[in-house]
Image (cartoon, rainbow, N blue to C red; front, side, top):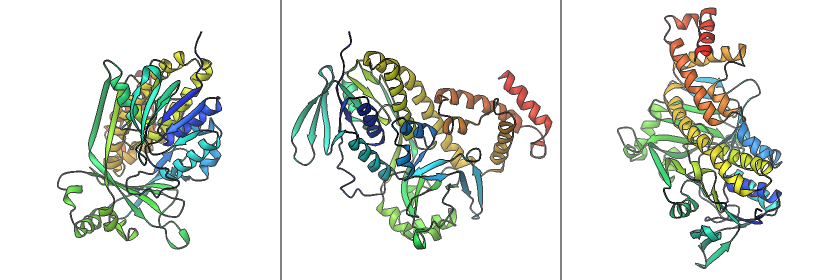
Amino acid sequence: MRTMKKDITILGAGLVGSLLSIYLRRRGYNVSIYERRPDMRKEKISAGKSINLALSERGWRGLEGVGISDDIRKVAIAMNSRAIHNVKGEIVYQPYGKEGQAIYATSRGLLNCEMMNLAEKSGVTIHFNERCTGADLEHGIARFENHDTKINSEVKSDLIFGADGAFSAARLQLQLSTERFEYSQHYIEHGYKELVIPAGSNNSWLIEKNALHIWPRGGYMLIALPNLDGSFTCTLFFPFEGEESFASLKTEKDVHDFFNRVFPDAVPLMPTLAADFFANTTGSLVTVKCFPWIHKDKMCLIGDAAHAIVPFFGQGMNCGFEDCTVLNQLLDKYKDDWNMVLPEFQKQRKPNGDAIAQLALDNFVEMRDLVGSDKFLLRKKIEARISEKYPDKWLSLYSQVTFSPHIPYADALSNGRKQDRIMGKVMALDGIEEKWNSEEVEKMILNLIEVQ
């Protein structure tokens, strides 16, 4: 006979922790969240180290599962295409999917505040300024120190979730309590820095608002996502070291000279460019993998604590929200028997977490190096044509990940590898630029699909 769980503690009041708490509260659990940071709804949290988010179908599905998607749509802006800016200032638009398909830009801070409001509205208690200092997983005890009072406390619960991000304290406690715990973190050579394009007159957008803007420059890039107030949050992804790097831009003149040469059409839009560049911190980009994610029926990692990824497929939050969807489905399937739910959750999600981590790294190369090339644009035209004529045989990797919430990330990765092999052969054809939409090319692709 299984023991019913009543009290659940979640470490981390971020996006995934907040959504998870709503799911669990609606199932009747007593849920408390302990958050290391102050309440961002009351404190002025400085900007400068945040990448705007892009909600796609997996994320919306997670929100719809607790009936809050309509609330979140109010703070999101549809982006139906990439806007590729070349060095000459010319812009090429690449639709993300079919007509009507879009990803949705939203501010991390704005979304997080809204999610915490909805969590509290559902009956969740959130404790702020509480840093996890240790845990006794066997007895379900988490230890905290309050940042303001320095008072130490112990919280006992039936189950602890670690939803406290890439540098998770919960994961450390799991590692200390588990033999043969596998853990790796990988930093890419690039960092990121937040910049801004302010709103125009009457809070107007100075560039197309329904697009994700990319300035790809081979080895690095600048992106811009729209905000509700008419501004754009820009992110420069740039090497830490090297001839062209954060380390090489030491003065305001260095910054202006570099941007005028490399991103000339962006400079007139960014009046506080140099000031922002030196005021805002430079963030690192890390991929985290670990195993196991669970300790018996006492603890479970979720979201970035289990599988932090780089942001280049826009799937970090979406993947974490999908974790919540899958967990809720398993609770339905096994009637809240956590001894069954947690091992199955880990079994299903670990391969998919690894897969989206690889896809995100791969997409960085595509975004910074390929999206502006004629060869890449031609390949996308060919793929779009085949997908339109044979939707049951060809769905782009991007659509599989972004617009098809029922395709596991691991399957999308495998399918994408097959498509790469096929398109490698197609793009190597003599005269492909002239005959890309011919019956010959079409038959070749269909034949290759059958034999892959």
